[in-house]
Amino acid sequence: MLELFHCNICGQMVLVVHEGKGTLVCCNQPMVHLPEKHGDEEGKEKHVPIVEKRESGIKVKVGSVPHPMVDDHYIQWIEVMGDTYLQTSTLKPGDNPEKEFCVPFDSVKKVRIYCNKHGFWVTH
Image: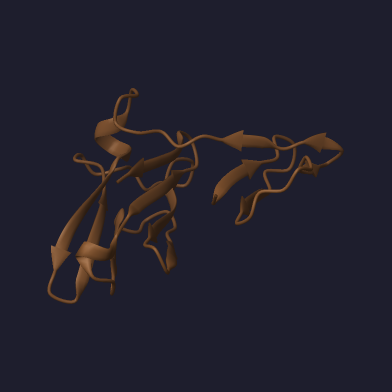
């Protein structure tokens, strides 16, 4: 559930919230599944989300080393998931690679980020 697919031709992305039996197609080509990367791939120090408890919820920082946020290499969004919610916050070049969310720390099941160059990264 909540799988991400990408069109290699036009760049469109689709988040699947309920899996079916069909094949996703864009630009007359099957869309490509973007798997979640965890902490064992190259580049983890700049991509794996770090979750910090805050008084008003949580703060998500992208990487133990701050991620670049320039026009051709940046974090496009941060997602926070719990049993009953999905919150997404978008970023753009020049922003800090971090966001705060008003959700209880103990309710967070998964945090994912998307880097426009290095894909989809996750922490549990």
